[in-house]
Length: 259
Length: 259
DNA sequence: CGCCTTCTTGAGATGACTCAATGGTGGTGG
DNA sequence: CCACCACCATTGAGTCATCTCAAGAAGGCG
Image 1 (cartoon, rainbow over the protein chains, first blue to last red):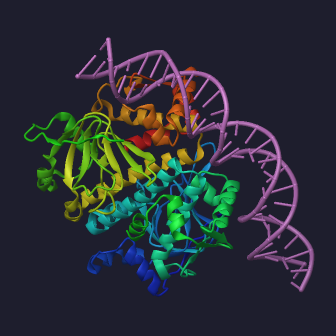
Image 2 (cartoon, rainbow over the protein chains, first blue to last red):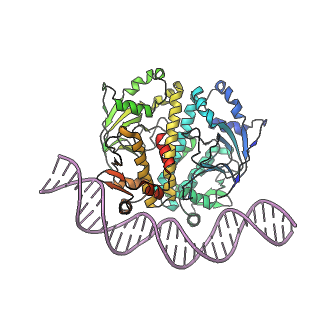
Image 3 (spheres, protein in one colour):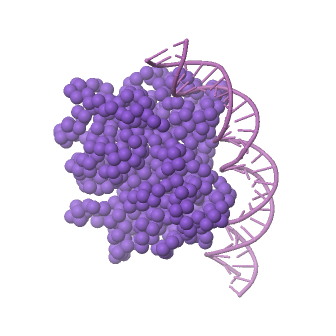
């Protein structure tokens, strides 16, 4: 569990790329009139990079920033005092990371980079005044928070009521659909497969099951021709069957990905 | 699973009681200058009552309102297409119910009254403009949403990583501390026990375990002198032992109750 | 009193875990 | 280019926590 600590690398002066713009549109500043965003410019230039396999912040740390993820995959985790770790969710481009009810003090979860990531940092201490100065921003944050809620609700439903195969299929399907809906914001995505930088152990931590059992369940799903995870890629072989196993309907899942 | 449908009874004209005021302070309008709340007056008078054992709204329903819970216990549930039901959380006075990322369209969960409840209704369609007009409100909603998130995170950690006894203890402890911290906003609370209107079956649905297993686990905890649920009351017999079993520290749990 | 919901307990079945061993893969440095 | 290392995936066998099914007992309510 000892990972390298993050070294934030400011990519100052980097001309804003098209992809970042697109992410911004989906993320925090979506729908906010440009003239109200002038003052945020300072923050929007705080672009950082973080390497794969490094920790952005730890659970319990008094971390000064919250972030918008521009590119890459991250993983948010929380541990019990007994040391057992749960993956709360996987973050994708556009996600807001580190926003929580107490705007100062300890982070309620840790954030870990699964791939190289680019992020935009906001001082947590200023979030409250930012929200008051820019209602649209506050509304947008409430929305992003509500969206995360809806993911969590799905996960909780899955974790509480479904068996291993079903949970696993749910997780994979949801990530698949989210990545597909992000389109070219996530590289190496093609028609029927996506990049999938999550080890079986981590899937296990997200689903409350052991890595071995993830493995066995994946084998079953592969043998049944439902889906396949191979060399860090996820391919859905039979979408309808997968939806059936996961007990979700496409409508729900797509709607959610678009929020 | 067939429950009576709610009959919302407007208690118009009822002079605002002291307790309601206190709840409001904790809830949506906390910290917002009174002069900015004039226009919300219309909504604040939309007080409703709903009977125990009735459904406020169903999952999937296109329900026109979101609510602040003034008094009583509610339960928020979500079902898989296979019909298995998960309790997402129990709502207590001050909680905001029905706020979600899509401000129109289907509710992502159902809401059910465990006791008689009083609520304040807000048209969902107007929430967006309300937030834009009153930044403090938007900020507050983001905060309430973030608080719910933090509960969900705890529950997810418990559901994924802890065994039956531990999960059960976590749930009971958290509800206990929350109710205690609400003080006289929840009736029938005394020094070392609280009213507890949750059946074993419902605890099971919240924790992802069968009612039978809840029962057995409760028996163990009672026999070990940890806690006791009897005739709709919950009593903590040995707080330290309970915290130990649940693998939570008092600090976390209290901090959370206060948000 | 009778009805319904909730609680309680038992016995057997099983899904998921634990422990243990082996094989594969990609990256790094000599 | 090879050898090594760390991490990850795979598989098996035995165990255990939790579920399922079944049957009563207890409690609240009209």
